Image (cartoon, rainbow, N blue to C red; front, side):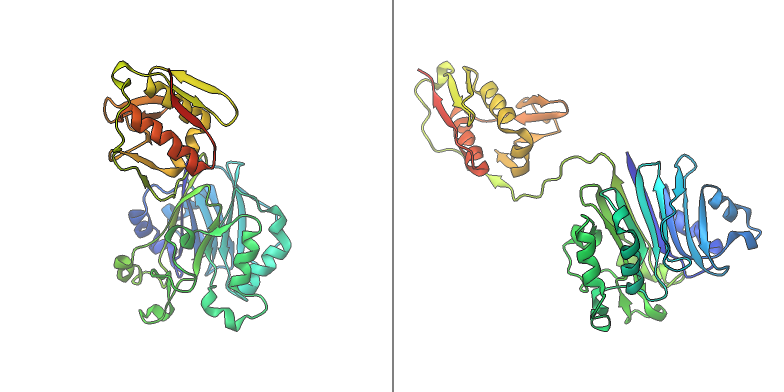
Length: 352
């Protein structure tokens, strides 16, 4: 299952802006809105209906709101509070914890205060998202409890700043701001954040720079969007290993489909005259996900893929295929290449 969550500090007047947000971010499952007014005091019924499956905390003009699609269950969690409206922890479908965040007093100090009281509740299915009003850019102003220290504390429970993790950008050197002080382009900062477990958060996007002129007509902040994959597929970020075409001479018996023997590290012996089948069994035995992690290339194609591209792809495990577009000699070389890359010792020979 996948959740799409959008966070935006609307700078007040959300009743006049929510349609614009929905137009740009249609189909989100959950919204976290900072500086949102209390719908009770307004006659806009469409605006009020947003909170049929959600809530808002804070004073009348500006508060912190969380609401979701009708088929999603949001239950507020009664955690120790820091201030009246800085944090709103909820549990999504009795499974995922979302901590809607809007620090607006001591800023980074509030973040640390919240951790002091509640970090024991955090787990790998915790996402903390919103307007932090905090950045390493301001660390010197807070030498005792600053943003860098906050990042380290979150890392201790396995939660990372997802924008930086996914983009590779350095803290304080972000290319995409989330806030413009007094809506001035020359006073841009990245102070809205998402902390979560990289295992589950597959996307963390700030509204593109090209759209910021539009968002500045509505607010001094731009929206952020994340995707949570509750049952993630394995992620692989290893440099591709490309095997050059083998120059080795073919064994004399290749034309008569030689028997290939592969002695595995645990002593298991794989023997099959069909070298492709033997190679498939080897990949399964050594650990196909480990092999996929290395991203081997065979004649310009992935060794393991979910696409059955041509007749050279053979069923490996449900939903995955293995590329057998190679000669027997190449298969033998590839066995040794894989074993070497994994630090394993195997013996691969031609049978008599």
